[in-house]
Length: 640
Image 1 (cartoon, rainbow, N blue to C red):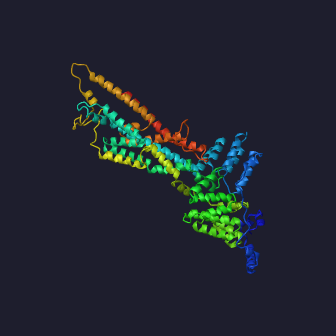
Image 2: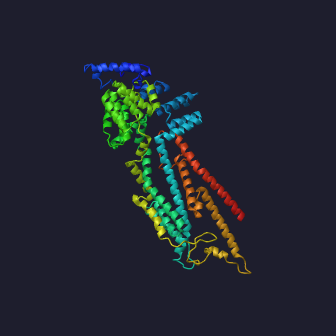
Image 3: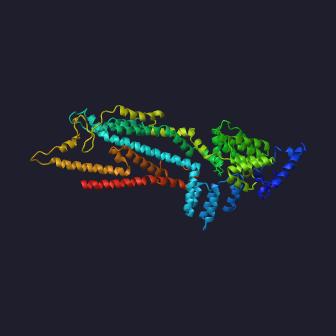
C-alpha cells in the first residue's frame, strides 16, 4: 500500500491516507501479511519494514518570474500557484496582488478579482482592495475578520493604539497639571510679591519668576515630562486634598508611561517597524507565500538569536519547502529540549515529516510518537497513520486515522481529498498557535531597548538617566507632604485668596479687586464702582469666551479649570487619543516623526480602522463640547 502505483489510483479508498477496507478484505490482507511474516527473513516485505520509497519533495526556491516573462499574467499566476502549492503554501498574497493589478486593466474584472480572493482569502489588504473594487459590503466585513486574525495586522494595531493612548494620557495629565498650575499661579505670584511689598504686593513679578524657573529647567536639559512634574509639585502646595490627590494620580500615570509601560510599547514598535523576523516566521509557518526578503530576515534573526525556537522552526520549514531536508533536520535537532510542549510537538512533527520524506519509516514513527506525547492533535495523529501506512502496519494506520478524524474531521477530509504526492500534501505541518507568537512579540530585544532609550531621552531629557521617571510620583507625594492649609477662593470670581491679605475668619472671602467693587458708593458722588463693576464683568466674559474657545480645541480643559479633574481629564484623554490616531493614519500632509510603518498585510484596511476609531472618539466628544459652548453662551446673554 505504500508504492507509487497505488498513489496514482484516483479512488480515495485505495489511497494510503484514507485506508478503510471492508471486513472481508481486511481478513484477506491480514492473513496474507501473516504468511509473509512467517516466511522468514528472506521475505522482501520484512526486509523493507523500516523503510519505504522517498516522498516527492519539490526542490529549489520556487517559481522564477524571469523565466515566464513571455506568458500572460494569468498564465504566470497559474504556473506559480501550482509550483508554490506543491511546496506546501496555502496563501498567495503576491499572486493575488498581481491579479488585482490585472483587474484594473480589464473591462469586466469580477472574475479576476474572485480568483484573487481564492488565492489569498486570509490576507486583509487583498480582501480590502477586492472589496473596494467590487463595492461589496460582505467582502468589507470579511476584510475586517481577516484583519482580526492576522498577526502582523493585530500587532500593528495594538502598537498604533498604544502610541495614540500614550499621547492621550500625556495630553490629559498635562492638561490637569498645567490647568491646576494656572489656577494657583496668581496665588504663588502674590505670595512672592509679599517679599517686595507687604501691604500691596505686586502679582506679576512672582508669576514671571515661576515661569522663568520652569523655562530654566527645560534649558538645563530636563524633558517636558519632568517639567510637568515640577509644575505639579508647585501646584500641590496650594490645592485641596482631593484635587491634590488627582494631581498625584496624574503624575503617577505619567511616570508609569515613561517607565515600565514604555518598555512594553517599544518592543512592539521594534517588532513592527524594525525587526520583522517574527512576521516572516509567521508567514512561512502558517503557509503564506513569503515576501521577497522574508527568508533573509529569518536567517539574520536566527543568526542573532540561535536559540529562538520560533525562528528556528520557521527557517526549518522554509528549508523543507525548498527541498533542503538535511539543513532542515540539522536545524531542528539544535532546538533545545527545554522548550515548551507545543514547541516540542511541532519540532518532532517536523522531524517526522523530514524522515518520512526520506523514506525512513521507523525514525519517522518514533518522531511522531514523541510529538504525540507532547501534544495529541489531529495533524500529528494523521501523520502517524501515514507513517504506519507506508510501513504496512495497517491496523495501526486505521486506528490512528480514526483518532485523527475524531479530533478534526474537516481537516482530515480536506487532506484526503488532495491526491498530490508531494510531501507537503501527503503530511500535515502544524503551525505554532497565535498566542505563542503574541508572547514572543513581547520579548526583549536590542532594537526594543534602543527605541525605549530614544523615547525616554525625548520625554525625560538628554542629560537625565532613564530611572528619572521615578521622580514624577515622588514629586506628587512631596507636594502633598509640604502642602499647607486649603486655600480659600473668592466667592465672586473664584480666584485663590491670600490669607495674609484677607481676614482668616471671614466666612465669605473675596479677592482685592472684588472687595473694592463691593464697597458701596459714597452718598452724593458719582458711581465709579458701577463703571468698574461693568468693566470687571466685561473682562470676565472675555476670559470665559477665551476659555470656551480653548474648550472647543481641547475638550475638558474648562472642566479642569473649574476643579472637576476626573471628568475633564477623561475628555482630554479621548480627544488626544483621537487626534493622535488621525496623525498616525497619515490623513494629514504631515505626520508624527515616529510614525509606525504598516506591514504588508495591513494595506488600506488599517487606515480605515484608525479613521473609524478616531471618529468614534472625537465626533461625540466635540459634538457635546459644541452643545455645551452654545448653551453657556445663551446663558451669558440672558445674564447680561
